[in-house]
Image 1 (cartoon, rainbow, N blue to C red):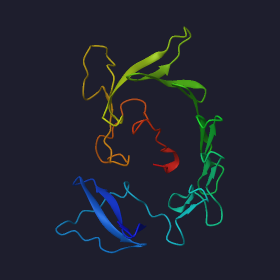
Image 2 (cartoon, one colour):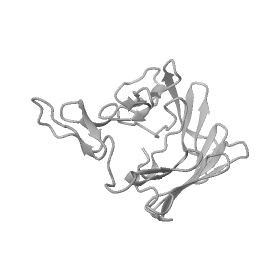
Image 3 (spheres, rainbow, N blue to C red):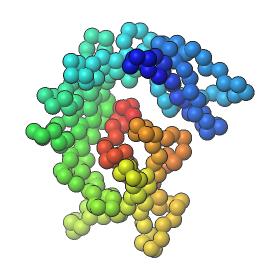
Image 4 (cartoon, rainbow, N blue to C red):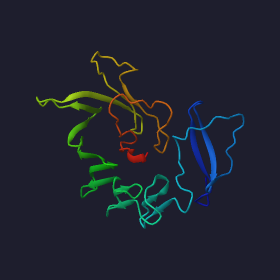
Amino acid sequence: MLFNGQPFRLLQIKYCASTGIFLYFPIHGKKAISCKLPAHNKTGNTIYGFKDGTNTGNDYTYNENGNMTKDLNKGIGTSSLNGIIYNHLNLPTEVKFDNSNAKKINYIYSADGTKLRKTVNDNGNVITTDYAGNYIYENGSLKMFFHPEGYFDVTGIPPSGELEGAYVYQYKDHLGNIRLSYSDTDNNGSINASTEIIEENNYYPFGLKHKGYNSNINGVDHPYGYNGMEEQNELGLE
């Protein structure tokens, strides 16, 4: 809710898995004004929704260009150090968690801002993703490539050089958001809803995925669901 263009009231949303109900908690500053729901005594699922990770000082800090440099709720930055570094194109080049070099994400771009590489360091487990047009490589091996109706999920490259994997096809809504991905893995000409639906997605208008249902993924996680943008879920960025 806005008052004269400024935030006046916030609503924290939590999903209750046992009932399938989304609970809306009014928040004013750091304290909830009220969290009472008549005839409802279920505990919300704290896995979903906003997580208040700090109770002192400002949670967020921005630079002179309006780019976020700290999100203390997620451990990005500290009270005295920025957690996100940007280049001259206002694109993030580093996101550091808990001020640790062992828990960070680095990005490399071309001169026009096209993302070329993403390196995720999760306490020594390093995954490097390279972007070469429609082809995506992970730690030097081809992971997937896009085709007009979806993508090809690469499962291996035998000595013969021929790719092994499966074609995945996708339904999109009127905004270009990917709502359903499927693959005829047994090549019988039909789709088994229980085993050959790769992923189903539903979104809020601003891009957040619905939680608590349609969350099973049969195959590789495809991070380009909402408006063709890559989701950044590493290290708790979701």
